[in-house]
Length: 107
Image (cartoon, rainbow, N blue to C red):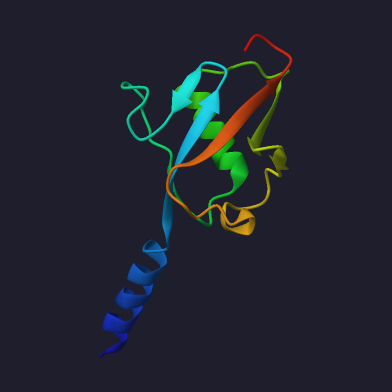
């Protein structure tokens, strides 16, 4: 394998990190791989994705624009810290249900 092939192989390995398909329950409905039908993005993420990215995407899909609201993502009763990754919480199973909680504002 020459150096070009090795560097290309390394890029492929990085791109192929494990991916998880989530279900996100929000006050405005469920975001999943097939709901809502007109969603611009689906909740499918590399496990190295930060929780804050999932929150931002869910806000975008359901048009949560309130800036004075505090958005948190929960798994059961566990509040997920925005700076941590899905993998750090061992969220690696497809279909895992997370809940977007909105404190204040007009959810």
